[in-house]
Length: 312
Ligand SMILES: NC(=O)c1ccc[n+]([C@@H]2O[C@H](COP(=O)([O-])OP(=O)(O)OC[C@H]3O[C@@H](n4cnc5c(N)ncnc54)[C@H](O)[C@@H]3O)[C@@H](O)[C@H]2O)c1
Image (cartoon, rainbow, N blue to C red; front, side, top):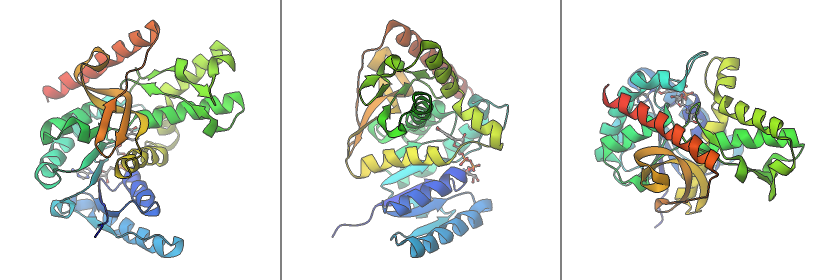
């Protein structure tokens, strides 16, 4: 008998709620929306609202709000958004000490309960958080991945589409490196249905779009006082769905590197293939000398953050 997938969402805040809505609508499985005891009412309320939403929209999923770790046991997929988001004026790195403690607790609780899960970390600062989660759980590198590249690339795709006056679905773009100010929008691989964007717009226009992408998260934080949640949730669900349905999507994601691109013992955004095996492979692409220099700089920034976490 086939059984339904169990999708555990750690954190029932803005992204957690949207993750639950998307997972349910796409009927990816049954959902457990977990939060701390003080917020269990929010988790339970969102779960009930979303089950009622299923009665209107016609999807079939059980959604449960909980603050009991035992309800998370045996998950097929875990998506972690636990922690605090940015407020205007804050960088992602400013969240390190608060979210590191939270991530350690989450990892300790998942370790024995979800040994077979594919874990997608979303909490910031992303690269340090996913590194910590893997360290604490001891899960295989194929099974622990960070979401940032899909979102940053989506932002780049949107800005390129608007500037070129074309449909956003025709634009492909890739952002690699750490999920911070040093992220690397790889413009040499940005295309509109195969046409390099460099043929469609002037260099200064492209440079301005790259800069806007780097500040894409901050732009939203400044507008609404907290961080984005619709696109981050959609991006994490895309990765979870690729795992659950063995879609083998090739996406930029924070993967644990063991020598790829010349980096070791580091999580950073690189192109990966996600299928039933989790992160099945890191794809090595050619980068220009300038892009590789930017990636080195980004790796150094991530390394610094990881070293800072080790002291906390
Ligand atoms: N990777 C990305 O691209 C990306 C994009 C946007 C936001 N983020 C990050 O995602 C995180 C969540 O953002 P949000 O907008 O959903 O925040 P939010 O404040 O709306 O929700 C976070 C939730 O985590 C819960 N939480 C705190 N400690 C917990 C614990 N120990 N166990 C379980 N839950 C716990 C809080 O109670 C809260 O409900 C933030 O760190 C934010 O910076 C990442």
